[in-house]
Length: 329
Image (cartoon, rainbow, N blue to C red):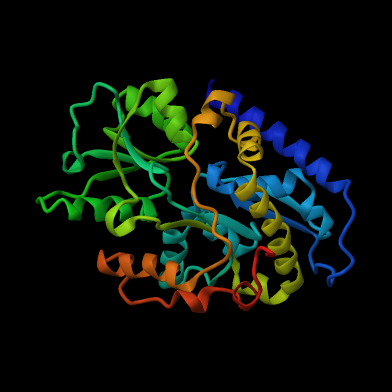
């Protein structure tokens, strides 16, 4: 399926979800949100399933919110749009958020956790006839990632270091997940780091094969992405943020308890077929934001020179996200 056709399917799916959600009533048991129409920059990856499930099932509308999903390539550029107010929230990789905070290009606050890597859900793939056989073979090669200077680079560098061999940092090439299969087949890149369901999709459609799991060793179970907003938006719209958290928590509950619902949802928003959805390895959907887990990312970034000073991850987590469980037990 071509990118344009896939994009058309995603747009049609999102429009249907937004319209359905708008028909659902609001929850009167909590303070009304200060801003009822908000925008979220999001990648259509498996890790975003709780958000899309919450959209489909009207959980945001029950909280008085209408959320407009805006498809992004990665968090790097989207953080700038969040900082200017063009986007209210962003779902993206933690590396980009910490990078923006350290460089003071944005004052980032974490609203909710998104997903963490399970085995075979954060993989470097190569073409089926590639001569690359082991992690060290990508030394100095062209490797596709969705965002430069992100968690993708960090995890790859961590795995390369663990090999104990002298390696040259790969030449990272920025592109959409949906373009990586063609890039591997056409030799535009030598390898690509993908998340699910695109690992399964690219393997199935292009015959790509795994070279190594980038979330292994020091980066096993690494937090990949979360939901963030600006400090300004959080201060001006605390009830809106809490409404978003409550609705998302319901989506997390669905994702954790019903794989069939996850598969159905990603067929819609990610545009993959039923077989691909069924074969997809599920990522981890954390129940809440854990400062210790996020600090792992900060400390790895510091160790690899991606941060010049140590950041305190807990200081970036909104108090409501620490003091209230995201998922009711």
